[in-house]
Length: 143
Image (cartoon, rainbow, N blue to C red; front, side):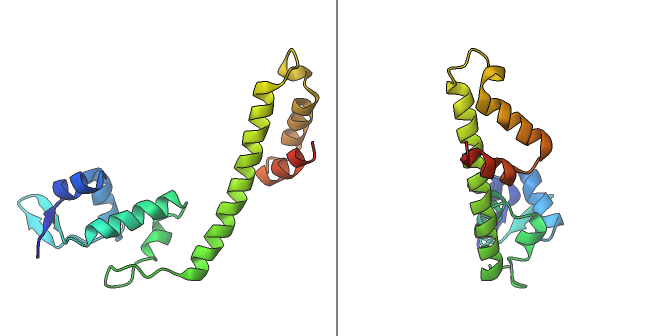
């Protein structure tokens, strides 16, 4: 088996050695030994770290990502949990799209001042009453 020391893993994945040690401390990956003071990992750690990176990009917590690995360290993905996350991402995308549209309007608004823009004034009133991005998203669509 070709073992990789932590610096080789870091170089291949672009993940800092400190993050790799953190993932090991959290139980997401496991070293198989040491060469001097350097941790050694099996080649499967490259795929494990790729899954961790994808999970983080998808908004999963490290505890949720840890649950994505089976006892053997191989991916054991829960389709229902992934489907739930898809719904959450769709909601975030909707909210961010509405926010982008609001910012674009403010940037392009012909009013001499943002404070003179009626849409911006309504947005401020909505934001002051409710801090929910969903509420802003729903309200912005009605402008």
